[in-house]
Image (tube, rainbow, N blue to C red; front, top):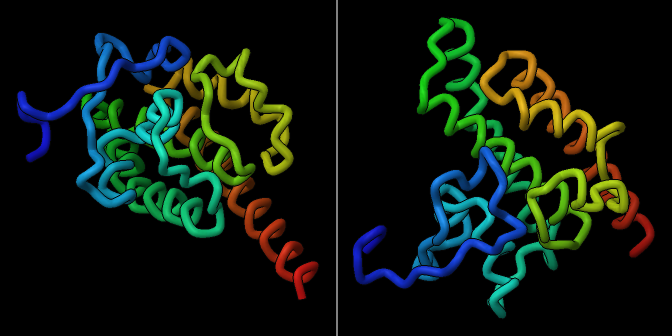
Length: 180
C-alpha cells in the first residue's frame, strides 16, 4: 500500500521546508494505516506536520509512551552510522540516516515537553522554552544540522541524545514521585 499513486498526499508546511530535512519535496504521504513506529520510520515529522492540518493523533500528549520509542529508534541506527564513519564510507544512505536521526532528536526534544514540532527553522523554533533539554541545545543542534555529513556532528548528536534521555527519565522519575 505504501508510496503508490493512489495514496493520499499532504503539503509539507512551509515551516518545515528547511534543508536538509525536506529538500526537493513539497508533499508527504498519508501513513495513517501504519502504527506510530512504522510511520516514524517513513516520515519522522508526520504527526507534527499533520496536526497543522487538523490531525487528531498527538503523540506528544503521551511523552512517557512515545519518547522512549524515539530513543530506541536512535539506538538502533547508531551502529550503522558508527560503522560508516569508522570505515570512512559516508554515502547518500548514511547522510539520509543522519538526517533521520537528527529528526528523531528534534521530535524527542519537543514531544518530551508535551509539544509538537512547529518549525524546523531552529533559530526561530523556541527550543529554549522547552524545560527538558540539553545544555546549549540550540547552538549544538544548529552545528549538527549544518555539518551533518561530518563525524563531529555525529558525536555531538550522540551526546545530545545521552543528555536528553537522562533529563527525560529524571523528570519522569520526579513526576512519578510527586504523583504518589
